[in-house]
Length: 371
Image 1 (spheres, rainbow, N blue to C red):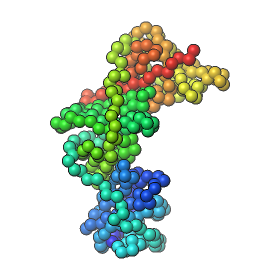
Image 2: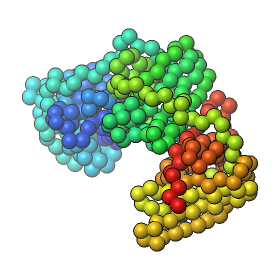
Image 3: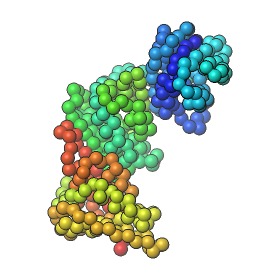
Image 4: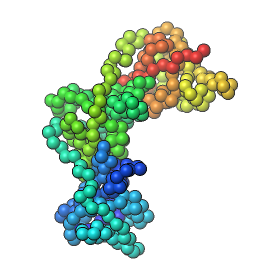
């Protein structure tokens, strides 16, 4: 196998694929890229057995073949080279690899491509096509709310519910919850599945700003295809909790506040909060929001006051500042609305403005007041 390509173009492709290479892998072959050349098409694959990424690029090939190339040394070599043509020559019998640049030659040992795991292919799948931009929005607005608790396996991923022309994304860690939905799909499918956080994070970084993405799925895997890339991930096999049950329906107290003002205030006040609970206390009355935090162990205390629009009874409620900051960071409207009932029930955060076909709801559980 022998081919030539731009070092910068090749680096860009393998950096996309490299996200699927796990750290501290037990099986050495999982630290490799699988290179396959057929005609003038180079296919680059990487996998950690849960998530697989395949990407394609056009090269100038003298001969075809396939080889597994150690990932770290290849990435480091291409990073260290300025943009220029490079030639990769592989002995198809011994899997010895020689990389030639204008500076010199670099030799390394490859691995038998037959040892590389087989990447799942779409089989018995259903498919929908969605906007790449909306998929990015869905991932950005939900993935941060997933759990890291492996004992709650379902919550470590994002729940996706296809309801014909509408698709709903839900993430929760039992302390906060985000539901994001958009409609307008050309679909007659009604189903649901759970996507792993790592796969979605890799997908978001590889997605284009424009265009569309084909999403296929069966009972075991989801397949994402766009431009020259394919990402495959194993679905999380678990029952997602009934998230609708925790969303309060009666919320008579409503506060509208400028998002950036609240976000910056929380960042300052949180410095003085207890580092275990991160509790900040909101004292809300007509036209006035007072934010307080204290850490009695160190005699730290801070208070700020903001203007707001408020309809309801005076309310004092505590929240984890870090959760509020995370939520406000992914919102992009000038103002947000808090819907609340009592100090011991969840608060709902909604944007004041939304695109016509999109819906976003964020829920945060209160921290019990410690005073």
